[in-house]
Each structure stands twice: as structure tokens, then as C-alpha cells.
Length: 170
Length: 429
Ligand SMILES: [Zn+2]
View 1: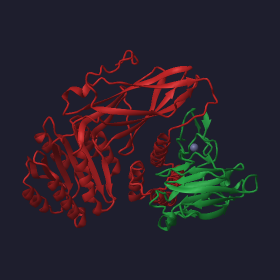
View 2: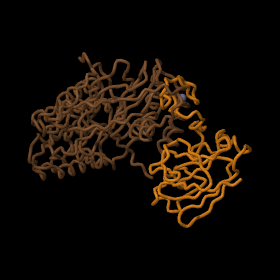
View 3: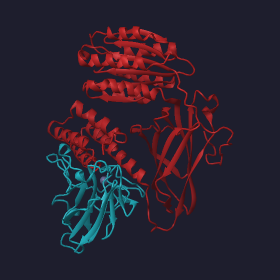
View 4: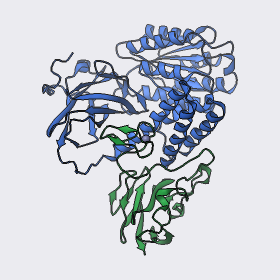
């Protein structure tokens, strides 16, 4: 039997999604448990109360990530103290990604509004596709949705068809 | 029915099946264990490439609610939609027109080679009046369809209503079941917030049709047109998936994922009814299996056959064309599990749909707190998928539920029709 990390319901082995709460069960991390109340709606789970996103800030591993985005190599450096969302800004839908790819040709390049997120987990920097339409790729390999993949310096991250070079800063 | 379900019995290949099936398995390898474990199969069912795509003649009846509440823009849009459908028809198609309020009236008896100008002028005479007695309209529509059907025709009723019908729900469902058994499918469309989605959905499901929530009159025309366009691509009727399971395997649940999500009833004979199949509406099905006593080696889980009535290929209704589904069973417990992303995506959406089902059940049994929490969790999942609008609707309704103990009629429809359309929502990038 396997136990849902979110609601503790038991399921037979091999079950992929929790019947009670919809959590993906294959990973034994806390993914998908982002807190959300009726009072707030928007880009959730990336604030201080998200244990996944904040627990490693003082731990080992890189402190920041530097991204060179698109053919103009727009450089963004951002600390890894919380999850960093990549997508397209859409205030009408309450989508406010930390890294807005709208002006990097995001729409034409197939970037979803909520596309992917980067975060540090046990000292390791990982990227996770958030069920985007056109996919997230690391060095050309498409990621399964919601399955975190390790990111290292020198990797090429691809958001839809938008290329981003990755450098980790200690 | 099947004394030896797993005797190898491959197609002889004399006639290739007119319907093709592509299965994908969630786990290429499962664990060798006596304990029960889950495994999923996703199937895409579509007409074979070499099937002639000649258009079958339509035998179409529009059954339209003309009750007082339809007055104004609703009725105006219904008339416009009717006119556009009339223009779409080919000479060999049959059209009939029924309106109903307290009673039904056949405005245009079924006819081929429709006199388009006449039909349009008849449609323009519809005047709103009276209440909503759907059964009357349905019966008149079925009568028209029966009178005008042929061996080859695609028989279909588009029923549009904006209100609740009182007292005749059960009889409506019975008639819809009868229609399904007689190769007549129903598109049931509800406009506004005052109709009964349980009833309309059930009527569509049992007849092999589709129900549609039309939130604004502006969408009436496109809904009608989309339905008729789809009907004109139908190549197979009464499609079903026949499943034969190995002794140590059971079928836990079955869902249609596309064109929209719906739960498939599992009967004793393990034959899933899928309704008609068109060239541009492939069906995607997921089956959740439970396997016990898996022993190392190759294990055949089941075999599958798609059957259907393909009017252009009289021979093939019973095409004997089985596909074996086989999995590896391994004692290596540390083997990495790789699930195909398409399965994760489909089941993720299905999980949300099932939470909606459960929230409605919680509510029906008076468990408001559980239902509220379920809606909130559902909203989180929807946000993860980028379905902001639906997430917002779920949160609003969760709040309302917590305060008042019930959902709004509109919110209930938004959530129901939104979650079941998750797989096909025009997913804006
Ligand atoms: Zn759970």
C-alpha cells in the first residue's frame, strides 16, 4: 500500500493519483500541497508559508540562479530562497510569475502562463514543469509534468521553444 | 459468456477492422507480488485511415424550448442557429423542427431536400409562450426521427431548453435510453442557470450523445453548428469497447477522457458503450486495472476489441480483431518507474473531475464541510494546471457552500461542465 502524503489516504501500489485529493502519488515529496484559502487566489504556493519552497534556504547548495534568456540573452539573477515561477504575466487571471517571459517572445515561443518552476530541494536545484502545453526541456529532453529534474550550471533550459542558459551561483 | 477469455485468437486479417485502437500502458513493468496493485491503460479509438470518409445522410430533428423564459435574445439566437443549420444541410439530409412549451408542435415535418427558404420562414415564426414540458417535445422529436430514418442515416436530436421540466424526468430518461438502443443520439443543451444538469447529462449519456452548458445566448449558434458539423463526420454508430480480463485482473474504473470526461458504466459483460464515432472526434478511454498475484515473467492483462456499426462497411460490425495488453512482471523492486507523460496528464485531469464527483456526492449526503474542502483542494489542482477561471469558480462556490450550505445553480454547472471539459478546453497557451 502507499499513503497519500497530503491526505494520508491509503491506496494500492501503482496508484498514480489520490482518489480523495488528486495528489500525484509517484513522488514522495510534498508537491501539490500548496496551501490555498478561499480568500486568496493567484499564484499560490510560492510565498513564505510554502514549506517546500523555503525549507532549504539556509541549507547547502547554490544560493542563486542566473538565467540568460532568449537570443538577446536577457540576464536575470534571482535568489533561491523560494520557488521561482516561469510563465507569462496575466494580471487578469492573477498570474504573476517571478520570471515573466512575455517580453522574451513568450507567447510566440509557446510559453504557458504557468509554465514551470525552479526551486531548491535538499541542496539540489530542480526544475518542474507545471503541466504546460508545450513542455519544459532540459538539454533537449522533455520533462514529464510535475516530475522535478535536476538543473546544473551550463544546462540549457527550454520553456516551450524559448531557450534559457542556466548558471548556478554559490 | 467467455469460457476461455484468453485463448489467443488474433484477427485472421481477412478484413482489417474499420476502427483502430492504440493502447498505452502506464507501467511497462509491474512488481511481482501477491498484493493488489494498480495499472492503467489509455486507449485512443479512431476510424481507420483507409475507411471511406463519405458523409452519411443526417436525419436531424431540432426540439426547441419556446417557453416564455426564452423570450428575447435567447429565442432570437435559437432562430439564427436554426437558420445556419438549414444552410449547412445537404440535399440527402432530413430535417424536422419541433417546438415545445406546455405541449409540443411539429413546425416542420421531416423532409429530405429541405426547401431552405420555407424552413427558415417557418423557424422565424416561433413565438414564446407557456411553461416547459420537455417530454412532450422529446416524444414528438423521436416520432419524427423514426418516420424519416434509413439504414444509413445518422439519427440525431438537438434538444435545447432553459428550464426545469416537472414530473416527467424519469420518463425523459427512459425515452433517451430507448433512443440510444435505436441508434438515435441526443445532444441536450441547457441555456442559463435554471435547467437540470443531472437530467440533461443523463439523457445525453444514455443515448450516446453530448450535453452542453450554454452560459450565454451568444454561444447558442456556435454550439448548434459545432454539433451538426460533428454529426456530419460520423462514420460509425454504437461503438463499444469489449474487454476480456485475465483471471487475476479486475476492471476498477473506466472513463472516457476525450471528447470530454465521463464515467463509463461497467456492466457484467465488460462492454463499454461509447456512442457514435466521427473522423475528427477520436475517443480516448482510460481503464484502471487491479492486478493481484503477479508472478515474474510476461503477464497478459487483458484483450480488447472495438466494435461498431459502420454503415459503409456492412461486414464489420462483429470484426474479430483483438488486441492483447501485456505487461512485464519483475521481482526487482528497485526498478525505476517511468510513466508516459500523456497518461500522467490525462489522469491528472481525471483526478480533478473525480474530486468534483465526490464533492457533489458529499454535498448530496449532507457533508458540507467535506464538500467545501474538496472544492478548495480542487481549486489548488486547477491552479496548478493553469485553469484559473475554473479554479476561481470552484473557490467562489466553496466559499458560498461554507456560508450557505449550497452551491449556486450556475456555479454547479460551471464546475460540472468545466471539469469534464478539462481535456479539451481550448487551452490558451
Ligand atoms: Zn490524498
